[in-house]
Every structure is written in C-alpha cells, then in structure tokens.
Length: 137
Image (cartoon, rainbow, N blue to C red; front, side, top):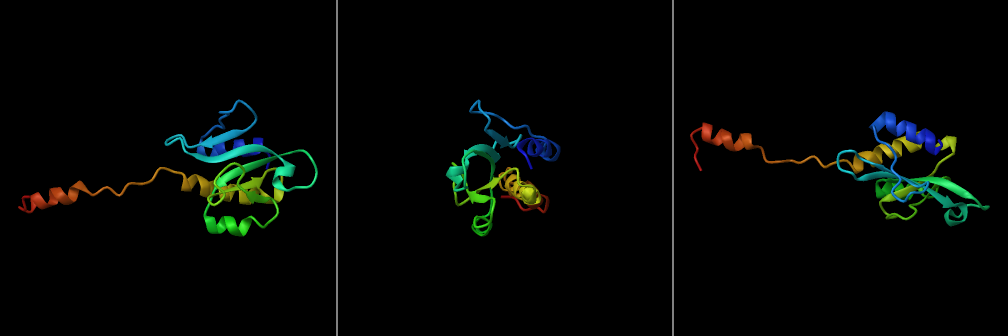
C-alpha cells in the first residue's frame, strides 16, 4: 500500500484527510472529533530503520497494544516507532503489498485506541428514580 492508497482508504473509512503540519511530505492522520493522532506517515532513511541500502522509505506509525508491538517488531516490515513512544507505537513500512491487510487492521486498532473515551456518567435517572419512590435526600 502506497501513501496515496492509504490516504484514499482513510478518507473512505474514517472521513479524514491527511494533514501536513511540518509543511513537508510527512502527514498526520487525526480524528475529526478529538484531534488525536491515530497515524503518522513519515519519510525515513532506510539506514535509520536498519534496512540495507540508501534511500527514503515511507512508514506509517500507529498506536497499538504493547504486547502486539513486541510480537510484530521482529517481523519484516515492522520497526520500533520512529519519533514516537516505542512502547505504544509501531512503524510499518509502506509499499509492501504483503502488509496491506495488516496495515488496515493495525490502523483500525490505532483509530479505536485514540478515539474519544466513552464516559460512564452516573445516570441522573437513578437519582430521579429515588425521588419518584418518595425517597428524598
């Protein structure tokens, strides 16, 4: 999956557009409602990732479960998160078709992990039910 294919997929899946806060080719994928990042697409030198040869590689950083990160980092195409918390984020190499399904799954997980928290507010119905039963506070 190329960066353009990824951007097309996130538009369809989440209705979000990549943002370019550094005015370069690096892009942030952000929730529309809480503005949290669920992904970052970065250009990284192959050398910094420990890959052979020179050149630039596109990677996608996603937030993930630390146990899952530990199991994936030893596999080809997965790296400690570039410029992010390496315990909670993972870098995945773009442009490797064999990783396309994993990228979608991991991006979906990242989107879920960074979504707004659902509040468990104490129900006001419980309190109003007390007064309805004649129990006044």
